[in-house]
Image 1 (cartoon, rainbow, N blue to C red):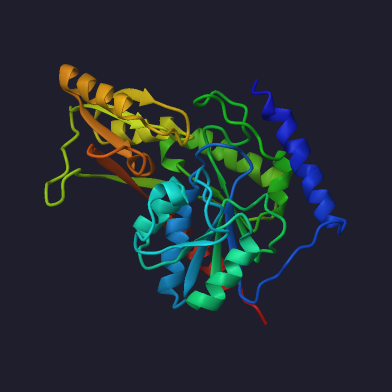
Image 2: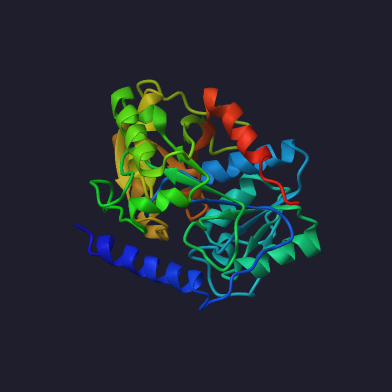
Amino acid sequence: MNPLSWLYPVGSSLHRTLYQWGVFDTHQLPCPVFCVGNITSGGTGKTPTVHKLVKDLVNMGKHPAILTRGYGRRKGPEVLVLLNGNHRWEETGDEAQLLSSLLPQIPVVISDDRTLAGQTAIDKWGANVLVMDDGFQHWPLRRDLDIVCVDPFEPFGGGLGHLGSFARERSSALRRAGLILVTKANLVGPEHLAQLQNRLASLAKPIPILPGAYRAVVKSSAEGMPPPDLKGQKVLALSGIGSPESFEFLLAGLGALVTPARFRDHHLYTQGEIENIVKKARKENLVVITTMKDAMRVPAPHHFSTLHIELDLGEGEALWRSTLLSVRRP
């Protein structure tokens, strides 16, 4: 068992209690704040959820901005605004860079102080709604809706995933959510999914629970070139993410014969490591495919085809939309 599996939830609970008792201040900004988070470490599908949420808010006529702490970025200004690729990933962190590449017209405001980041987005960029990435355990800034992403493979942490995910909070924390989203729902069997939904309902009733499917498409490494046909193709699946299994399952679902090449989450690839990947691929006649997040960290001049993922809520789309529209400020 991961040693953090008990320590992290205890610390998180204490931290929350100090805010609830008023030991530390909380702040409310003058526009709605949506939060996408989780109760476990690792890849629960926050990035595809943020991507969908922001696109849908734009389609509703809103002017959103994304707030993130920029995990893994090198030290820089207290507040950094990423827009249209105006900063390198080393300055912003790979997740912020990925969100900006998916949503190039949306300001991604990076700071440990999410309240300051939000006020900056309002004052300088005219944002009238804020989307906080990975903020379910962030207490200084009040939210209007918490969307909690649950990985069906390791819903509560401490399971058998890559390097073992751990719980950030106890499962009872799901009661604070406004919406629970089971991501990657199409990658597990219907019986497993039904059992998980029943368990979540027992923990967090009457909070709505939505299953979301991953829709994947491979994009070519070279602009203007068609993506590789993966049916029967031997693929080297390069990943340094929290949940490499789902990435590999998606490739297999596209017909690929997958050989994993796994690194730790947010791994900083060296030239030597990538050159070894290229040599292995050539020797074994493999096509290298990586995740969009990993592609940010692959050093030049190497470029690999990438797997792009979008979240599809299917019949749950109406409930999702009505939940978003219900978030209003007087």
